[in-house]
Length: 160
Image (tube, rainbow, N blue to C red; front, side, top):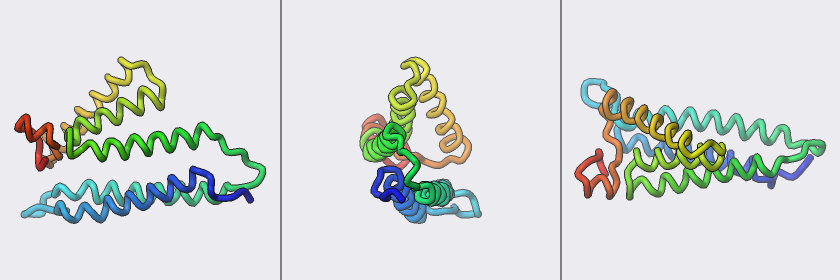
């Protein structure tokens, strides 16, 4: 059996921890509003729990297939770490530039540099994904998204 100190199980384990923290932090935003409406913390709770389950399943699968005859593709591990690093950067940027801008930049970076799409195609995907998130959260669910320092300076954004 190959040693489990390879990158993939470590990334999945770290993602499990982060998604549990995300689900736990969602209670601070309020899961429901008065009258039983969906609160700002509902989606982070649901997505945190779903991500926890999926990451735990991937971690389990990664550990189970750790067999001596299996070669680890270093590109795949590097891609996983790259996406994880980009996600961390996006999370750190939220207080500065707001959730929507950070999310759009994350989608653009993953599309352009990880998936190696053309720049215009990556920009279209990022704008479309950001517009969908805006429509669902801000317009449909009326959930304020963090506007960050940039949103505060411009007078836009939810709690930023």
